[in-house]
Amino acid sequence: MTYRSLWLALAAAAVLVAPVANARAGGQDAAACDGGAGPAIEAKIVGLKDRTGRMKLELFPATEADFLTDDTILLAAGKVFRRVWAPVPQSGPVLMCIKVPKPGRYALFFTHDRDGKNKFNFWRDGGGVPSNVRIGAAKPKLATATIDVGEGVTVTTIKAQYLRGLSGLGPLNTSE
View 1: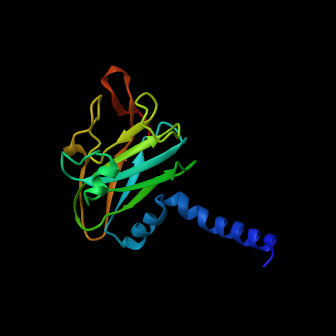
View 2: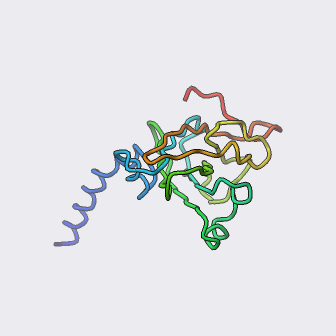
View 3: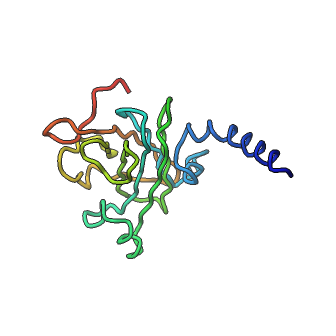
């Protein structure tokens, strides 16, 4: 196979894969939501401020001590942690999928990394939890982030929240 034919084959494969990637983000985890294979969480993200940067969905143990704890600490202790990154699709619905090790209760946190720096910027980036309770200026409460996951695919909607003055993070007034 020549370099040119290899390049053409890869380009054709990318065209075939692109619509699927835009439909549900999550890399390898996206397959867990296809056909209800689970256990997994499919999060529909609504209320994005814009279609820039990338999105992150993180899965934590549903305990106060572990929620939003550094992943290296959780993994070193043998605890549940999973992270999925995806580019923000330029149009259409925003769906993310994250695999879950087994059915149970977990904590889930969404981040819209608008500047792509992989460090949460309170002034610019957004976040969200499954309960869609206003996050405010403090770390989200565990109770707002917990989700019960069954054998198949658990579907949730997360409303993105951004800085809304002195009161901290809150949802924007959007039609989504």
